[in-house]
Length: 212
Image (cartoon, rainbow, N blue to C red; front, side, top):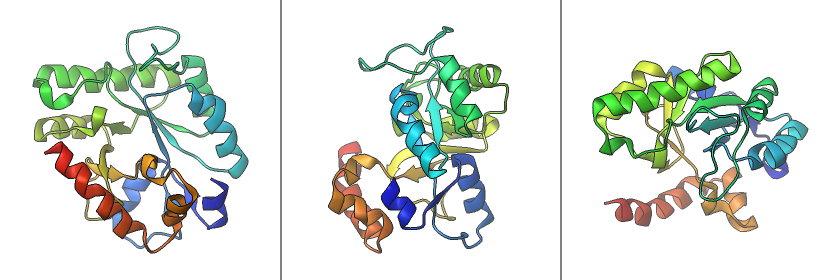
């Protein structure tokens, strides 16, 4: 994060990033939107201190689960409490929705998609006392039906398709850069270089083939 800060990157929320793309105007300098899916506790314990130190913001997408003081564990990992979520929001972190139970929305009918999408938005909005404007598709999977329902509830939505978002993209099916592909110093440095898009394109080929 310090490396990106030194390279002149500033951060905006996911919703603001989508709004800027929708406007189609030249971006004011180097901007990025940092996103975290699922709401793991490490975002609060390890991520927030670094973000605050650098004056950065981010967006946390939550799959809310059943009503409880703490989000239920996921993949054996602890997740955020609603108190921590409120503190993240108060620190300037955008809280976005990620469904209720984290299903593959493409496998659900219209009624169940609506319940997953609207249910997560309502739970988060009630908890933080604010509008919820952004959504991330569970597993990144979406369909025409899912996108239509999400479009009715949110200003923007994000997939896990690997790519650098631009103004030609559908703001309810935006790609992202998964940090799995930038784990070492050499690949991380590509984030601020002219080789970023060629690298992402090459990485995306086997990923796309695996999905098909």
